[in-house]
Length: 595
Image 1 (cartoon, rainbow, N blue to C red):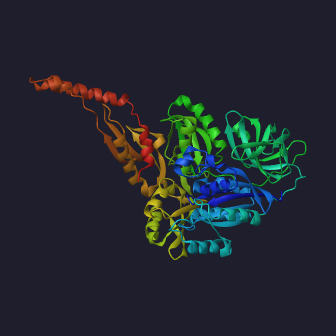
Image 2: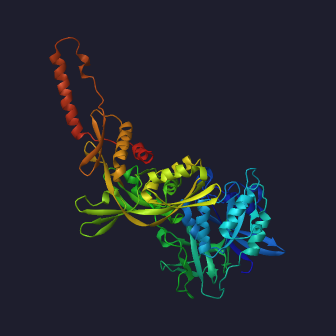
Image 3: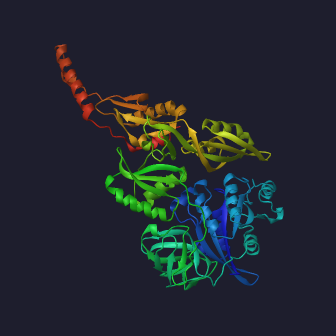
């Protein structure tokens, strides 16, 4: 155990974690130079295309330092605020963390929040200044920011570059010298913390764990404490670039177990593995349960694919434990699922992964957050779907979730950022100058307002310089109304939304105009209305296609024409009663992108 080090890499999105991880793997000879490719720990095509890490990845490296061989377990983590749950899991399995800061950008919001996560778990922090090879790097300024944030000495900050390989050897030396070896009792009953799992179509479910006490051997019977299920450890081993089978995984090490588990629900991330004959009764305290922030309905385009969609979501949930879903049905779209996501990027990624990995084309409804509705009798219910809101006559008041948002930006964009937050019903609670031209703004604002396009707008007005992080702070009472969209008097439940009364008229009008552009014209007139309760607040009309019935009349009496037009009018009227309006899929998506 003296020669094992477990550490993770934390940073803001795009500060060069994956590139630096590549250099570490290359320097330690874990990957041969011929197999080297950029971001070698990112498996998904999606991660490569977008240049972001979505999943945390664990890998073991061997390194010889002063003639002594060390085993280094590295866990690479995502940097986007929507995947901070992955980060909390990785931190629970480590003793130390490399805090990477981009020398050209300085400290950003996600750096701070990930750092606090690591400090809560008493991890040893090694600060690293990345991208030192760029001309725009500001080493002195950014080092001062790091020193102020962590309270370390300036010489403890390691200058590095993932691109050129500068400072990689210093990082490896610092990992061995500064990070403590794992603590644990090799003779105690087995306790191992599961921090991730993946689904393999041939082998079943593969769980990744970190052994806290005891050791795990091939062929021994193990028990999962949370679910109480018992399995035989069919294959165990450690994670190199590929899985490497072993006879035994010892205390403090990170490994994988394959035991032929077929059902996704039987492996819970955060569960504890123990042996059957000499079992430990207590589970390891790991990381908090994840709370979804944004809810949206996901429906198969073809209703027959409902069961297939359920199976796809269950497999996806395995290596993305923060996704939650339950069945629901909609009049407009049939059967589907109400899914909970950590944010909009998370929702987008889940949708793309369903399409790529499982060939499921899905329709997503307007995303919303969960509200608490109180009735006049004093009961309260949680509303995840606008159609669950009690009717106006029994509804007393509604509470919506609030968040505390931290935005770090350059001082020249403070005015624009404040305007944006105030438009979104935010209250400024604090303003701190971190340096002369970097400001940290704290706001309290409703989560429902930031769900749609807040992040994109923030990036636009600050030219990409503002970084954003948030955490929930509870519920507050608010004047919310349910906005219903109706086509020819029929309600389209997939388009209804809960919004603040002040924004209802404006949004209702915008949705109506958008739908008028997108709904194809029929042989009859279509009325598109936005309503609050029984009161219609906006209306647009899709004009009917006119078939020229009088074309065959040339000359002659006007009564012949009139007779034909009257006949057409009657037909149109009857058609309107029986004709149903198809809402194209673009309409559901367009409502999400309304400005």
